[in-house]
Length: 302
Image 1: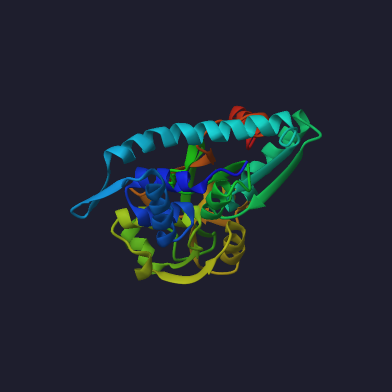
Image 2: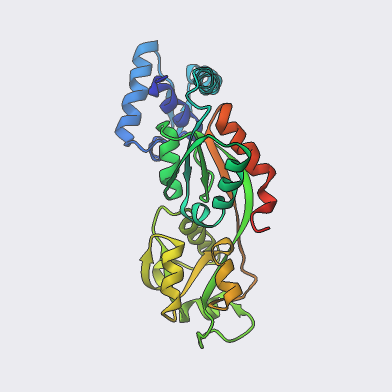
């Protein structure tokens, strides 16, 4: 089923009351947002938005359409899954989009366990950063996502999955870091740092937390930017650099003594990994998989 994309554009624009933000969430241009809204307005014969100074607001007609758009989109997505279930399209076929850290360190054990409980299913995993996973969901190219970014896309539903902590790490014999604990400002400017690429959920979280502490990444000594936690870990093993990494990504290196955590006083980066899907219901294999990994999330390291 290929639903009229204009209604989704209107819904996100009405929710954000910002055409630029709506364009970002839908992965289209701002002129494309304006064009889709204008086409709806021309079709129904009245304006849906109005300017109140510098602020965008819904007209009375816009408020009515916004209310019904949410219901329509939820029912459409539910109908799509149920129809696909009847014709067998999703019974044995599951397309997952999983952000890099989760794909490498969290979900493999869950996939093995799920296949043992529910054999003869075909599961395809696309590994990408959180923004790309959201884009695939919006384009209906995957059924379910598991992301590590900030849950701020109004087209999608975000369900907290497991808690994560991002810690500052370096190789164990890094002589710059030999105290038990540091104040963030006392150590961060002395370090050579490695960061994930822009668009990574981990990078977004780090950027925001450092800003809250009054620190801009642009003012830090960034030696290199890499596209995965695995690449960063390998880099750290051969340098005296440091990096912010998910605690889930460094379990083996902590046990082997290759890496160590630089303990920071009064600075903690915690987040959730999120199960992500389009607004609306899930049925069939996507629902079965979501319920399974929620039920067994405590067994990730057991």
